[in-house]
Structures are given as C-alpha cells and as structure tokens.
Length: 103
Image 1 (cartoon, rainbow, N blue to C red):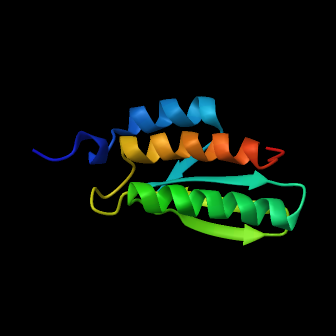
Image 2 (cartoon, one colour):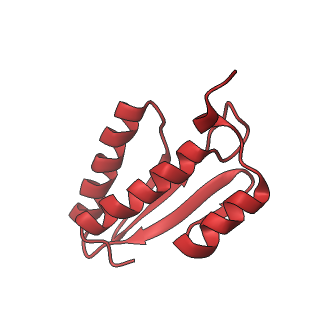
Image 3 (tube, rainbow, N blue to C red):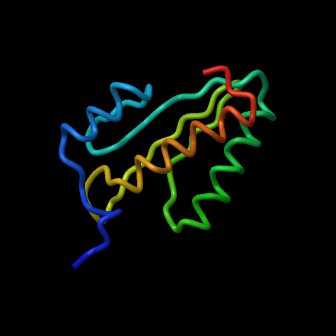
C-alpha cells in the first residue's frame, strides 16, 4: 500500500482547501503568489521554503520577482495534488507571514 500522504486528492477535497486558503488549483497544481515588501524578504522566504522542501523530500516550483514569490505544489508521481501538497501549502503560508508577506 502506498503512502496515504501521496495519494491524489479528489477534486472536492482540493476545492474545499482552496475555498478557505487563497490557493488556486489548476491542471493538478496548487499555486499561490505571495507579496513581500522587498526583494530580500521574498528571497528569504524562498530559501525557507527550499530548506523545508529539502527536509521533506518534496520540492515546489518557485518563481521570484520583485516583491513577490510564486509557489506551485504538485506531486508528479501521483499525477496531481496530494495531502502532502496541502500540508506544505499551509506551511508556505506560515513561512510567508514570518518573512513579512503582505498577502
């Protein structure tokens, strides 16, 4: 039996998460753009996400711009969004606040 944290979620499970979290789901990817007061704040957040991802062996796509960082979580092996992606999206929100996110 596979890891339950890496099972592909049903659409209604993902929709329920997105309805209350500000994350968006499309094509099996959970995404959010977070705003920061400065470029260094955004980069510090991206580094925090990278360190967490490395420890969890689950890596998002990150897009860094001035005052913003885009985060995309998906589990390629499962073919979509899993409980692990939701967990790490929530953690991303917590880390963003700690690093001064305005969103």
